Image 1: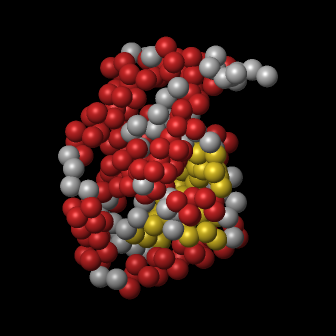
Image 2: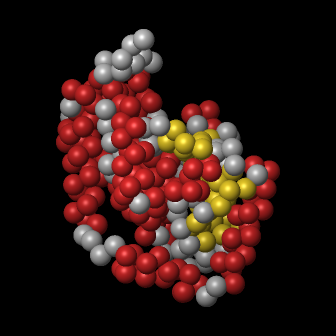
Image 3: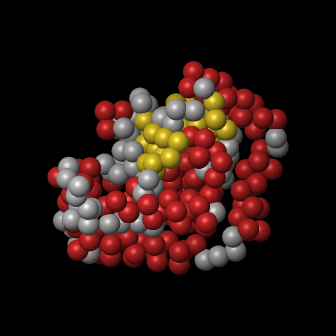
Length: 262
């Protein structure tokens, strides 16, 4: 693995550190591939009982890397579809990992970073963390991560946050179900260890099978078709006139044309 993903092993716990603090742990195609591979390896490792997903520095993950998005804005619809399917594979791998997962959200999580939080079984956030599904500000939608975010916060909440792209605080994230627990920043590792201790007391097969039970009872839908449809949607949006204007404005650090100027 490159320096962008740091893997730490302590007994039966695997911690995957997003390690691009200067870029707020934003991800690109390389980091998506590395994180997917690390999760798949963890899923096959009988010695791993739990996986913690964490971010170095001030942010958990700001979502997509600006330079990566610049390249995708110029790419074809088919290239964008394939790119989106890679992200869908990462989210699904994390969501379906046959190990309990904990998101350690010490700072900001935006866009795809919210998707990572939603895919984890347990989400513990600092009281100072902030969140946002900001894609609509770029003329896009959080299509690929939508199944996991909607599962976490419900359709009613998703309709608001998907449409407005507004930021929300940790208290709101707790209230709408995106995270399970808020903790003071200096105590977040203590809270993670407490959850790991509880998982350690559970039967390994039972704790690993819990999410599959919930999925089978609650979801009952064709996830392959959902991934394909969502990847096709975001690919269309990225190459559309509105998507091109939104991404261009973001990269140029200006307001898109649909924003009313004072």
